[in-house]
Length: 298
Image (cartoon, rainbow, N blue to C red; front, side, top):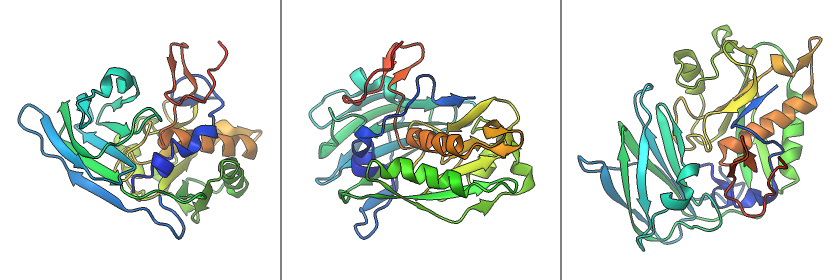
């Protein structure tokens, strides 16, 4: 899948500005009729020093390298060079996603770089497995993202899902939202940490070719409105970092859901999962790599 729409959806979502400043946590792929070709889950085989090569074929519009490890270890990419020998991490390394258990590199992360065809080189450490996903055909003018919602409890989130769809449709993106699936009661309150065993078990239920949204009753260790597994998440790779968590309790007043806020939070965190940063990250020293998004006033 690579869920990275219109050159990984980042380039298509130039006008979808996430209206927030701060961290990637929010406090209090395919296309209809023109399916892109995706080569998913290719194993990379570096040498004993963690250095290796892979080929990007002509026509590739995006690729995502996944690095997984034990949950108490943070995989690290130390180098990524294009076929011309240009080191991408020199300028874009701060946007490489790094977390315990899972890290990734997404190309393009901005319009300044493209997935040039030819032989690329990389260097990685602290990993147990490396995989490569590539998108090798472009998208239509009206791309569709497949979304699978899950919910704990009996709240009706249909209005919020429609609001989320409306947010994306304003940028010419259609969300194909599947019927909401009900989660087992053991998933009603979970950790915001995707390495937590219960959270990992829940998120691993999601399909690799969809954006998986988990509407939980509450976090048991955080006060977030929601959080994504990564920027981007592990699109195309089934597992514990392939989803978004949304906190239902944080969107209620007097027991009633604020559907407008819930839909906006779902769209916001979904943007992170697809690779979008805040225009400005706290404390105002890091700005997203997309040229036409304005910096938040500080």
